[in-house]
Image 1 (cartoon, rainbow, N blue to C red):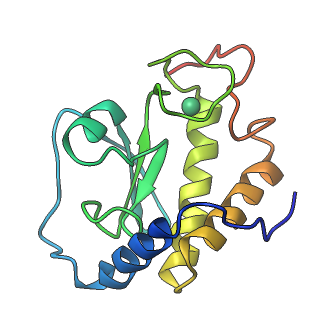
Image 2 (tube, rainbow, N blue to C red):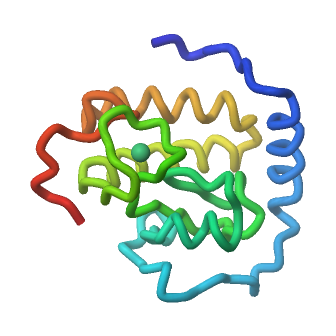
Length: 159
Ligand SMILES: [Zn+2]
């Protein structure tokens, strides 16, 4: 696993990510979304961790929301929040899941670790792609999942 995997995406992504990251500090701190689709799980390192219905988020806020997100990548997420999807979706990159299968606890925690690492790197100014690669590596190191894009074989502990 290489730390410097080349970014082969359309450069529109880098431009968008950079604009959102630069504007992050200017966010209205009073703008905090809430609803039945969002539940506080715990607080960790000064960040409030929420489990969210990602389908609701994609239907109402952004189609680009994946398994998890934070305020340096999504305009509508406050800087002290991390959102983790409780579902795998049709568009997700996971190999062994069906649409709207609930994520396992291991998957949830692995995604959370990813988002936490990525947020902290981006807060210091690192660009998304680099932060994302480091976060992926941390996920692999943690061993919570065999592969960050694969569910555990027997999801006994489904949420
Ligand atoms: Zn998935």
